Image 1: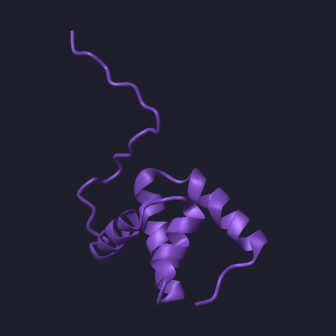
Image 2: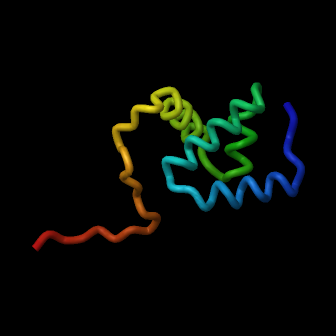
Length: 84
């Protein structure tokens, strides 16, 4: 398996951190597929995520263009509102 240069890895991590949760899963899955054997663990280590997250991203990609969540995106650190 090939690894990325430090500069490319840094840019990938910056991009990953800027994405929504759903898009992070999908991006990680695509990067892992590029690397073939060992790619899931390498990308999980690079992005600091669970390998299962990447596997879930693969499932998300295989379901495209159908997306049950549509445009809904969870906000990181979002607040739960009480109903009055």
